[in-house]
Image (cartoon, rainbow, N blue to C red; front, side, top):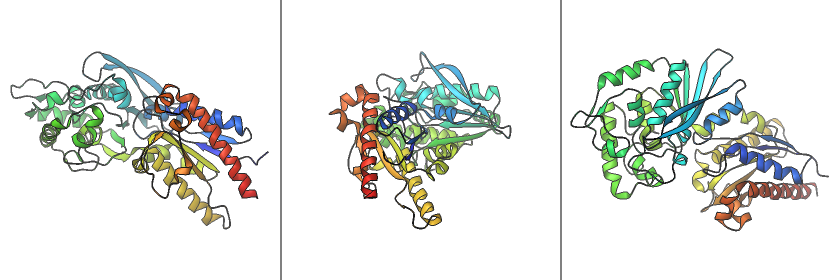
Length: 398
């Protein structure tokens, strides 16, 4: 039997099909059928998108789930969500909520580019503030809307009015009619939140408007037709001016412009995947790992820029460098990085060998089969990669 290895399994979710804890568990089951002697450490990840609050809950001893009944993503109906809270050793009360589970694109059956709203996030923030907290951490990936955070502001008491002085409707359809922001209600909200630290987790640095802005870059993902780009840009810029924001701040265009609105409320934007990796202590775990297994739904060159795969890849490189510095003569290739993806599109960066990445579509034969039963193919991926690890280990020993 081969020498045992320490394997850290730290994947993101397969968006819309399989949450990160389930991905990690399935990979672990598959790997263990081939290499039962190995030490497997599951560390489900997130980058500010879906699963962010759940990852925080798993990582923090004593953390609690709190259920919420919120407005639906289009401003009508209801959806059930939750936030996670914890009291730290120093007595700080921290709450974590994410856009994905309050007004995210995974909550809708079809795109709602004109009516999609961030109202439910504002309702969640209000509920959190009422309970008394010192810090709110907000993951803003997977938004379904391009409303610039208008819905969130309205549900927190800010009056956004059209030319007749009436409250604007939910979503981009209402934002294009915006003519005024009641400064007193905005200042009241800012004062209400003044003593609370707001930390925003995101994986993009796009500005609010322009060719890299919220509408042009992320609008199509939410179903926004290119014929609306100019009017959406104008509406977002108008909201930003009325709020006193900066449309060119990095991250202002995140989540359909929600990043800008949260900055106006005093939030600090941080790279989501890196912040969560720090929270989970991944650098410490990777320092003694032989193999690190990560992944996401769709792997391409952009996966290595701010997302979970790129963050894990960077931490692996750091671990290799540190190990070489502290242990001269050690195997500088350790830890080895392996990647599982629902699918692989385009060319990966040359420094990240495609041979080390495995797509579920390759195992399942086609994309639909992989989507229909991701757990089965994740287990199969665990088996395949474990066999590769054994062959590589045997080759090194020879």
